[in-house]
Image 1 (cartoon, rainbow, N blue to C red):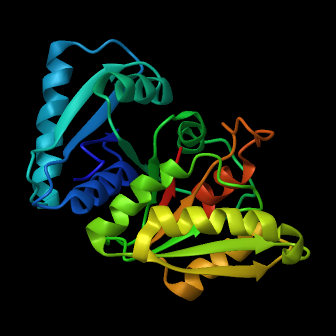
Image 2 (image 1 turned 90 degrees about the vertical axis):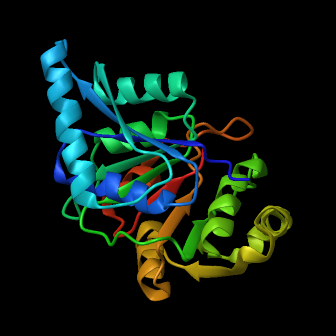
Length: 263
């Protein structure tokens, strides 16, 4: 039984948002009883006329995508800032996953966007879909692990759910700057969790040396033809010092494939 019952898609009728909705509907497919709710956050009060117009426009967008799903996608119109509205709606709707479109920008080193803010603040898994990426089901998944022990291995359950659904292979990647031998104890601890929680979908664990971790990850994506990049943000870490989420922001900004953050 799938762990995903309801998906939220931040939606403002822009091309990246439409692409994210298309990805979500393709991800759900025809046979899975998963509800997709698009969320339109208005910064001003919404009158009934504008709400009805939004509903009609949304229906036209859904029809134009021509994706058949078991449950018909719906539009939720709310008021407030985008990130706050999504977080509030996710809690009220008890959604299991957020899928959000992003333009990305490879020309800048780091930037704070609605997407990166949502990814770091959300207490649920988020898939960010870069505009222009192929709308394809994930068959080759990369899970990036650092030198830290996975604090809560149970969060890998959703990744296993996705791997089962699409019969996908999960490639685990660790980028190290110096000697990997100094991290053997951590590697062995994580290895047991990976084998247990990812079952036979766990394909391999690759170790790549690169002084630039982000560059190493992006090169691996291209080399292995990865369809979905998975990361475990450490900004909510409890057993170790939380990170500032810089790598998470950079990957959601620069990745050419969708990025799944497990939290």
